[in-house]
Image 1 (cartoon, rainbow, N blue to C red):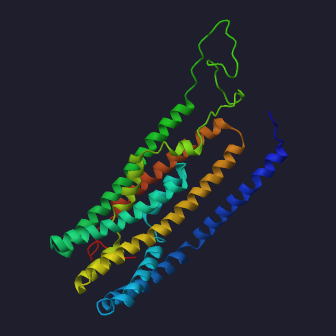
Image 2: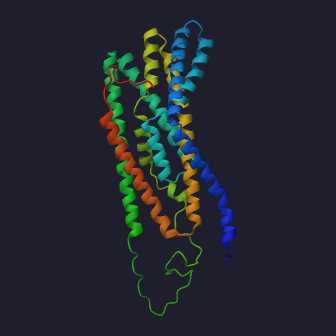
Length: 332
């Protein structure tokens, strides 16, 4: 059995500490300059939106030139639109920070949620205006209640996470059952009746790995994450679809909305990967200390905190959501 000296263990951990310091510094800079970043993002979005409406007008006469430019500007609009405040980023960052998951799982969740948001906008406008030929007021009212429903799902996701966190805490804090008395039976590390502990030296794993824990996230929970993020239709996509319907180039509006969703997916996926990497670094630092008992309590407590954030955010957004004079659509 090899013994690792404290100096060697510290030398192995210093790259992780540097990486964690970089994450914290970057987050601090974003926090300090968030208002300037948000303002500049809104100004760029307005310019891109004006450019896209002009390109929609030109696409009927020059479909090849104006169409390609429309796709490029729609992608940029989606990327910038995702930088602003929104409940989707709260959901995905909270979920990934409290649930060990693979990179493939994180990308799948963010991609599906963003594409669902664009698909809901396309389906809503197509059904309400193209098929049923209802008024724009009915469209805005339907969008408003879909938005309210997504906020309820955010609170519901928080409740599910909180229930699982409490169960994990109960298992971690519950005193272990006393081993049965077995007379005249010597126990060895590889005996079938061996009682495992953190220092038993049997070579078995006593805590699940991050890969094993990622398997505990059921498909139902992942579906709830995706729907709670994507049920609210993208407001920018609805505006483009409405304008495209008015001037008679609705299919180009559908293409623009789909590309917007792809741009949003790129930004949200990048944010999700950053959160996941930060959690992985913090997890490795916690495990390197070798205290399995404390580590078994950290993740449930972190998950419980995340569930409270989602519940509060969902309830607050539900109460704050109001129909605007324009019908409930907020483009920026």
